[in-house]
Length: 361
Image (cartoon, rainbow, N blue to C red; front, top):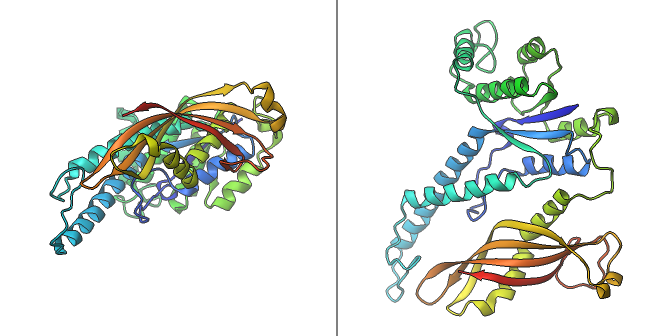
């Protein structure tokens, strides 16, 4: 049996209140579920379904917060009088910001983030409501009758509320119709998507039980209680390692702040016109297993694996007159092991052996 977890928007909301705009993504609740699925070796039994509009909504939140906060910061700077200081951003003397620039940045970042989602060991599918007459007829009928997720059954409730929930529910129904072997699991903190009316509707259509989780603890219990006989026979045995798991391990390292400081240290000689202020890891490509040299074999345990990977980064470089960006592609040689002793450049269970620039600019 296969389970498909459908995330409600309230489980994926990211307020961007920490002011970090160089990296985007879904919130920690999403990552915690992915981590739990990987930890329990359920990557062939459990998948995640993300409503397509959720990422579009997240992008809108990112743009709005980025624009309003940046504009406020620039207005504060403009109101200060620094008679001996000439400020420039990206070589421009004026400090005005255009919404179109931020929208372009957001488009680029979210395209890359969608690619990142495909690299998880857990299968992550984007779902949406198809634009056919039958689907929209059902949506209109729900609104007229005020049936969940629009409102309560029998005409009670506000029919104009819950439109996003309707899109999520109809997307899940369509996915189940195309993939009859899966069982839908609704992950929502909002009671409307867990309403018994929808449970009965699901049972009537598919003769199957709808599963529901409202909290992280409930989700953990659900995943832990999946019976052994329901697990896909191709699920990996506990303690074994797969390439996709290694990707996740390396991804966590490449997002590590200390690793970014190591990259800056390694790249200082390649930047002659200023100094590196910040670094942004864009993507990881071409992860390939590498053979150990004979002389290395006694340095690691028998579980150790060695990988090369291409890492694309953008450096924010500052000099006396401006701040500019520099694109660099690196080859990183990393070793994954369980028991490192007295090794330098070790992040968790990963040692970074070598960083080499393969493309500058």
